[in-house]
Image (cartoon, rainbow, N blue to C red; front, top):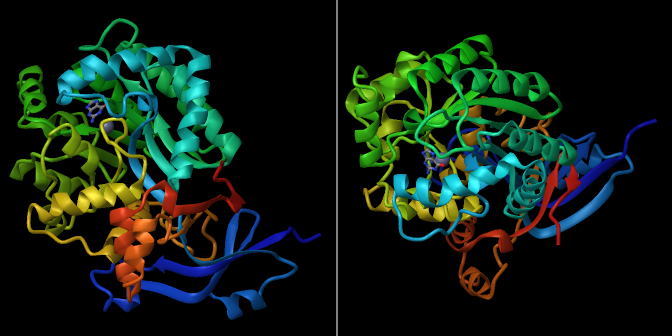
Length: 433
Ligand code: GUN
Ligand code: ZN
């Protein structure tokens, strides 16, 4: 018996390389009359409708014309226990953590709260077109189990980990070097490589980990080279100064992580704003990935990420929401604010490069470009359906739009969850409500 196929019809856009302008036509495939053929959660074929349709056998057809079909968005840095921290007023990083974030995360010791919030979290990211996220859970094992349990129920490709934090945090939000090792180990055993789940070893940042805990993180990374790792780096000046006090032997902030052997292509470094030349050299040498978090960097007054400067050194930057320091679950709104942050530095983010970044670009940073981030045959069928006429203001602007690049720019500047008409997770329609 052959399994049921689904054929999505619409305008298809997918990337094969990073484009800089519409002239880089070799970098993307765009079909006005396009289709995606899906079977068993995987893409069988995509591109020109007539060609794709010729391969279909009894496929269920879902017609999304005139909307745009793209690979689902990838958010490379988000805090699952901060769904009720987003939009908290008046503080910069360290005060914001102590005043709002740590109290909210304390509640995730409760498995019921964790399970409830996990459902709400996935509803939100899915509604906004995000089909893969790399998440920080709370210090509690319960929150990480809830995060992966709900992802498994929804068959979503998710990466995440329990934060390791053993100091400078309130009661109920600290582990110990040993318990952080034991819990992380148990979570890796339970989840890493199960279905679509992958684990990220997650020392929260230098301020909340003692040297003894950093040693445990080092052992974990050595024992599990196939796991991701993630932490925060050089987000805020007070944070950097305090880190230097806590680790006086380190040459600079990044050297804390480097000296414990945490850097490599699987390491994601949230923020990476105020970097010194030696730190940038170390990023080049190790292949670790800075993560640009524009809405958060603006909201917390943290600073301006130097995308062009890092790229010029051959570094692959990822981009992310960083909810709840970030102010939107939408990768479209993330591009909107990212565009402005780069404008302030004389860097212009072209819309084609922008949409490459939140799909194939982030997949490249994760080493997952063969599984997600494009519509290539063999990829997992995570697809977003975009409507550039979603609001009256967008429709009015679209009346004068003449090209795909202009349409993408309207989507990234004016779009949010309203512009996400449908989302497919492994071939299943998944946007609720
Ligand atoms: N640094 C350490 N923890 C956090 C966090 O939760 N959010 C942000 N933006 N920075 C951090
Ligand atoms: Zn963060």
